[in-house]
Length: 342
Image (tube, rainbow, N blue to C red; front, side, top):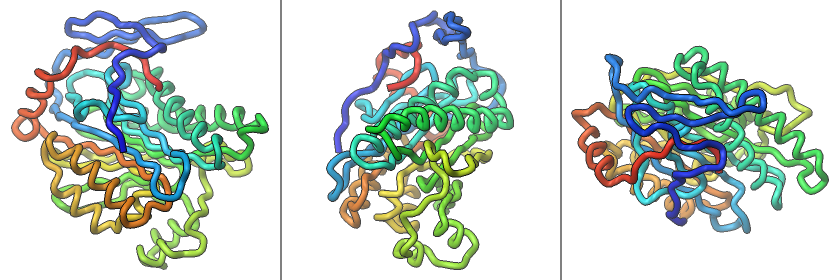
């Protein structure tokens, strides 16, 4: 496990005005045009979101085929390595949407690693180009499906090269465009959880034969973990033989909700009750990084058969985690208006 860089500069955009609004530039018909997110607070309810991520190669793999991305679209973000402290964003303030992404590559050797990184970069880039669609939960869900389709097309094209033959990736994401609702998207068997008032619920649905058996109540969590078909999935980015069916939905947000997006290396090592115990203790910014470290560390200790990745976010109003936000703002470097990607 390593902690390293927080990305404040990217080749996909240039800094815009700093006072009150953040401006970036995105490509449209071969030309650059400014895209702005109004940072002026509105009457909409506001929510602070603190989020962090971590990945580990595990005990048996030689390379890490997981990839993750967290941050503001067009703002400060982390790709594959955490920053010096958890990131934070004020939702419902008219600012840029926040995104949490995890992808698990398949295909072996370099192929899986390439596919997962292509997936998170492609999806974050496509959503960055659709700021108007992300302002509403219903249109955001459509934008997420379109972004997944674009990533699927790109990975299939890349896999046409012999060295990348057979590569693909799962992908799970949360997109926070306001303080009331969060949109999610899913392909494969990486997972999205929410813990509300100590109760854990899996938001996403595993797109796999074993996942469906469990969703239908035909097998238990323990049965699923040891099922002979547990490694099979029937949806992924880059698989041309399957009908492409991304899953997407909308969830309401409540202050204190804790969100987890993880690869199957984590759910293979920890039972749901163990995940629930860890997430139930996350209440402030100070709890986020220790929780991520504990999730990844315990999963590695219990299993470690696969790469392990977790990204975590906790939300609260100014009366709860808001004081953490004020402290983080004082200690953070100036926000840069930048593009997205690795």
